[in-house]
Each structure stands twice: as structure tokens, then as C-alpha cells.
Image (cartoon, rainbow, N blue to C red; front, side, top):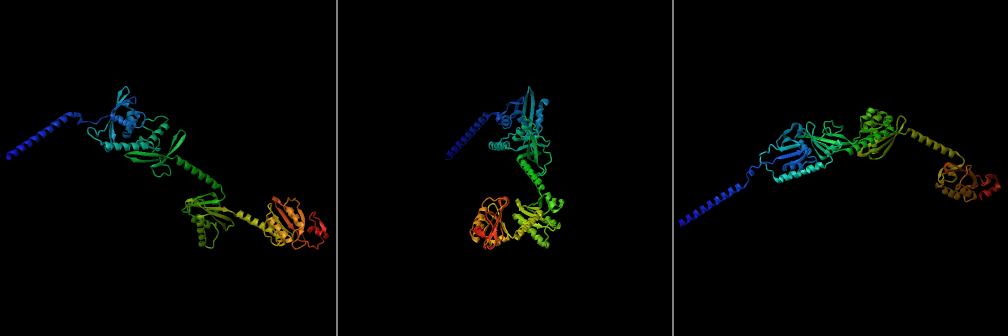
Length: 529
């Protein structure tokens, strides 16, 4: 039994040794099949070969880099890319023909983006440029393909976004040289220079100029660029990043045009307000004076310095009260309540007040609401208008008194037959006629005095053209007897009709309606019909 166990253990040991030997043999064969340089593979260099600024050969990494650079000229594309990282690379490579060899090293101070450039002039127009990362040489750095793809995708998105943006974007170093720019900046540079721009790019905007008045901050300014006889306006914003200045210039042509139109409109309004005889005062939502015209100074007598200091509405009204340019109230509290009412009414709707000043003038004060809670007050001197109105009313009153003093009954009709005016005797004669039209008047005459040939003649005369010297006639009076009438033509198609005092039937004579002559009493039948 023991012998069998020893035999089995020996067989197992032999099998294990054979397996280990076989594995070792396979490893040695695999090691001999792998190239020697695979274990010590170096990073492939980035080398460009140019002839007369044209790329004639490049390593695969160099071709990949060149394909990602914007532009058409290979030499300038590479110089532009290098100048973003090494500010001295542009002038040094452009002067390579004089030096023959240029070697530059620089990049990020933190050492995460170091770069070494070696440019050699090989003669016959040949230039070789070698790029290397000193920190990555012989380091065996391996980049995850997924991470690299994600970074390249994000880079492509950012590059495409900046290249299709209408704004100008660029970076400048401490010496003022442009180290990077987007497509809009490059296109505008080509248009301004009227040729394809080379590196280094000229600065289109002076970032050292003082900010424009009213800028939001010291890093914001409005600038202009002259091109093809036109001016382009931009709102330029800057900020510092890793020792360089990043500038963003947004197109502001529309804003400048709008501001210019608004300024011209305000100037036009100012000139218009300056010629107005009406005083204008506009107060903002906080009731501070924002705008006034010269007429306000003439009408109120307030000092220009006081008005330009933008007083409040109540300070303005208090100064008017001190100058006796407001109606004199019984006490200050009553006056203040009146001014509060004026301000509240003007801010909610159209409000008009008549101010009879102690000096004898009369002002019309109009309050109007404006957008955003502002309110405007207009001061108009209507003293002459009030005087003219009073004189006109006095003349009308005098004319009415003269008509009422006449012994004849008088009525005036317009061209359309409307009753314009009548005196007291006319109303007494016809006992207060209702209705103002001529037809209403004739119907009342017929109802009061009855139909007669004399009334028919008057009706025909009122409805036909009348001679300048007038028409005469007679008709039956309301209380009996004869009533003589006289129709005269006035200007504008108007007519004046007058009735003389009725002649009793026992009177010795009367007027003839046809001839206008005095007839004996026996002809009274022919007049009345």
C-alpha cells in the first residue's frame, strides 16, 4: 500500500517538472520572436521639410498636426501655431535665412506643455523644422485612445465654434504681439490689409487705449475699425489669462446706429422744445427733474442753476410758490394738498388746471403721464387768450343787449335753416317757439297766426335766393291785425328776419306784400287773404 502511494507521488512530481519546463521553453521562444526595438520604442519625431515655404515631406505625426491647422500656406500655418506657444518663434523663423539655425525652447511655466523647436536652413530653399517635447522624450508616455478621441472631439467643437463666430477673438502677449486669433479676425485682417496676412498678425485694435466714456468696466471699451471707407464698431472686452490678454470684440454697428438715431432724435426734440412758447418740465419716476426747455425759465422765473441741479417735483413747486408763480392758497397745508392732487392726477391720466397768479397772469398747467412712471408738466401762458375770451364774451353780451333793446322781433338763420340767434321780442311775439329749424319756425307761425297769402310769400322768400336789398311783406299777426316782415341777406348764406310791431286791424294803412307800399285800410283784405 505504501509502495503504491510512493509510485503515484513520484509520477505527479515528474509531471509538474515537465510542465514547468515546457512553459519556460515557450516563453523563451516568444521573447525571441518579439523585435528588440519593441521593448524600447521611442516616440516618433515631428519633422517638417519645406522648400520655398511649401511642405514637401513630413513624418506621420507632423502630417497629422498640419492637417489640424487652419489656413492655406503651410509655412505660415506652422509659424502661426508655433507663435501661439513661443512668441519669439515667428520673427526667428522668418529670419532663418540670416541665422541658418534656430533652436527655441519654451511653453507653459508649469512644464505641462513644454516645446522645443529646431529649425535648420539646408540650402537651396530647403528648411527642416523639428518639434519635440522635452518632458516626454524617452518617457514612454502612452495616451488612452478614448481620452485622446474625447479631447480631439472637444478641440474640434471649440475650434469650429470660434471659427464660425462673428465676433473677433485673439490673444496678445505682454509685448502686444498677437499670438492667436480666430477666423473672423484673420478674415478682417486680410480685408483691411487687402492681401493675405502673414505672421505675426497686426493688432487691429489697440488694447492699451483708454476705455470709452460710460464703459461698464476698465476691461470694456467701444472701438472702431476703418475699412473700405466705412467704420465698423465693436464692443471690446478683455481679461488676463496666464500672462496674456484675451480679447473678445462683439459687433456693435447696430447698437451704434440705434444710439446715433436716439441722440439725433433727442437733439431734434431739444431744438423743438427750445422754440416752443410752452414751458416743459419732465420728472422721472423718482420725481426728479430730467428735462426742461428755455420757455420754462421765462415763464416761471426760476434760475437755470436750480433747474440744472435736477430738483425734485416738490422742491420745484416750493420754489414756484416762493416766487409767487402759483395760486395763492389760504395756508401752506391746503396748497400742499393741492399739489399732491396735481401730481397724483398727472401720473394717472391727463390733467389740466388753470392757475390765476397774483400778478394777473393766467397759466394753463397740463400734467401727462409718461412711460416708466415719469410725468410731464406743460406751463402755458394763456393771459392773452383769457383776455380775448372775456372780450369776446363781453361783445356777445353787448350784442345780445342791443338786440333785446330793439322794438322789432329779430331772428337770424344760417344757410341750412338753423336758428342762430333771436332777441327777446321775437320770443315774446311767437310765445317761445320749440325747435331750432326753419321748418319748425314756419310751422309754429302757421299754427299761431293761421295760413295766409302773406305767410306763403314769407315761406317762399325764405326758401329761395334773396336779393341784397331785402324783401318786404306782411302777414297776419298772432293776436290779430297785420305783422310786417323784412328779410335781409347776410354773409355766408345767412338771413336776418325782422317783424315790426303788429298793426291793429283798425289802423288807417298797411304795407303791400307785393309792392311794399302803404295801402289804405280798405286793402287789408288783400294783405291777409
